[in-house]
Each structure stands twice: as C-alpha cells, then as structure tokens.
Image (cartoon, rainbow, N blue to C red; front, top):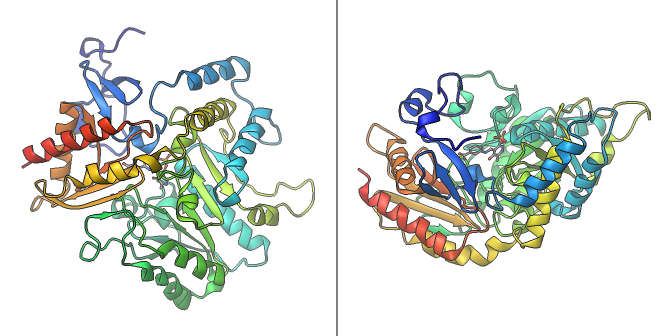
Length: 441
Ligand SMILES: Cc1ncc(COP(=O)(O)O)c(CNc2cccc(C(=O)O)c2)c1O
C-alpha cells in the first residue's frame, strides 16, 4: 500500500465516525497514517508524541513486531473458529495465562469483543448469578454519576454521563452513587484524595431506599477515566467493598482503562488491594491491536452458574468473536511483551516523576485542578463562558498541530501515555502542554 498522503487521501464521506463532530472533523481532518513506539505519523508527515496510548489502550507502545508476527501466524493457521459448543486451544491457553495474573485471583475468564461488551457481559453474569443462588429478586444494577461503562444499553444505564444517556431508553431500576469529585476539598492532589471515603455510604442509602434483596450488583471504575480522571478517595473502595459484601451485592470493577499496568500494578484491584467479584477489561488486553475484551470472574460466581443438567448451556450469552483465535494470539503476544519488559509494574517507578511533571502545570493559564495517579493525569481547565468544552478542544487541536496527542473530555485534558514512556518524553508532554495552555484563549 503506498504511503498515505493528502494526494491519495480517500473520500471522507462514507465513514460515519464515532464520538466525533463529523462535519467539523471532515472540514479539517486530523489523520494518522503510521505509528512506532511512542509516536504516530500524521498524514502530513509529522511525528506526533502519543500522550494517550491511542485511546488508553496501546500500553506497550506502537508497532510491536512480536504481536504482528503472532497475528500473522495465527491468521495463516486458524483464522476463525466457532466458540459455541466448539473450541480452539489458543483460547484456553490465553484464559489460563490471564488466570495466572488475574486481578484478586478472579481466574475464570469470559471473552468479549470490546469494553462495552465486557460491561454488558459482567452485568448479565451478575444477574444470572443472583438468580442461580435463589436471589432472583435482585434485578437492580447500581452505577455511579460520571461513570463510563461503554455504549451498550447496560453500560449507558449504569453509566453516569448525561450525553450518553439522554437520547436513549435505559434499563429500568438502575440507580447511582454520587461521583467522588470534590474540587473544594481535593484540588491538585497527587494520588488518592484525603476526603470523600464516606461517599461510599451512598450504597447504604440505596439499600435503605430499594431493599438489598432488589440489588444485584454495583459497578464502578476504580479510577474513573473518560469523565476526566477521578481518583478514589482514600478508603472509598474498601468501604464500598464492605457494604456490598454485607448486603450480598456483587462488586464489579470496570478496569477497561486501569487494567494491564496503567496504575503501576497489573490491575487497579492489585494497586488498591480491594477485591471485587467481577472485573471487566479490554484495551490493553491486546495492546489495542485486535478488538477484544475479557471479564474476570471469581470461582464463586463462575461455579454458582456451573450447575443444572450436564447438557444444558449454563449461560445464554456470548458473541461470534468471543475467544477469537487471532485476538487470543495478539493477547498472548501482548502478555509476553508486558512480562518480558516489566510493563505491568513499570508505571510505579515512573509515578513520582509523572506527578511532578504534571503538577508543574499548576499555575498555567486556565488550569483549575490536576489529578494524577500511576501514568494517568487529568488537567481540568476553567470553561470558557457559555462554551463549555471549547477551550480544551482548542488545546487538543493546537497540541496535535504542535506534535502531541492528548484526549479531552469536557474541559478536562486526559493524559495516559504508553507504559514504555521515558522520563524525557514525560517532560516533553508537560512542556508542550504548558506551551499550548499559554497560547489558549
Ligand atoms: C471504563 C470503561 N468501560 C468501558 C469502556 C468501553 O470500551 P469500548 O470502547 O471498547 O466498548 C471504556 C472505553 N473507554 C473509552 C473509549 C474511548 C474513548 C475514551 C476517552 O476517555 O476518550 C474512553 C471504558 O473506559
């Protein structure tokens, strides 16, 4: 395929882009044509430092030949095989390898095709589990304000981002904890804020309102990413775990972003030392190379469903691409890279440098908060009057033009570089972002 340039650019008309202002984008497109290590190459030939690991997913950096070779070999060996009532060894091998690093020992693995599918899978497993143990009255699912759990009807129902919810009918019976963001008490914090553990008591209030016998599960992101990086207050997750356990409510950690080394431990479950009953993952599972997700379940949840007649399908759920052989090959090679280069814990050694580099931006124009943990940063800007989100979007476009890819959500800038990043590149991100903020109106 010839190098992709402006001269041979395909028409932009047919592709309906996700989560994008399509008309604005197609009037001034930002196109990436190659990637290697920490950098993208833009259509006009510029090197762009990847400050977001793509979309929080390319944890090992771009262009990994080990993964490419594994995918090529698998495609030429067994490109696709059914996973319903049929099997292929590589799916079992990948599940076993994942089981060996499973968050909190949750070593039963259900494969999906994305984070959204992992979330809907975990919610359905939770409902099926409650039914299987004779708690069929537990049909209610609890999420949290500002939570993001993908775009399935389950995920948007437990999610807490209004733009993802307002236009669609939602699952009946869902309810929400309050979010944990507290600018007044917890501004410019490195790591977990001191204040707010008591917000976990919202689960007690929902039990008092609905009755524990109606509640199947509560799902939270250990660190809320898409909403703009909200780090749990000290003691919050522990409290949520204790309340859920006491009321027979399953706790689900949505680790689509935090999974596979993002915080400096293999999973947030390990980082915070709090064990849920189910964990959803995707993104870093295959280093963003092949769409895939995985739900980690405890033996208790899994075994409760492995009952009934031997010839019966225990869970009427699954996808054409569940356990896809090529995705499994990409995942196994990804784990090899993570393990050989220590990437599942590398962020721990970089976290202090990351904290300092990002908090240097305190005092930059428009910055009203900075939140950092592991290799994640949320830099919150004061919104422009009457135009929320426009200031951060302008910084995003400016950064891209100057050679840095960032993410913005509302007026929060989110950074989550590949875990291979060097300290000099962290400093470059902070410097380039500081320059962009200085230019921002
Ligand atoms: C916690 C969480 N749960 C589920 C999903 C959905 O995954 P899929 O997209 O693979 O269906 C996500 C995805 N998170 C996500 C996806 C795209 C952009 C951004 C952003 O923060 O800009 C975040 C996520 O962050």
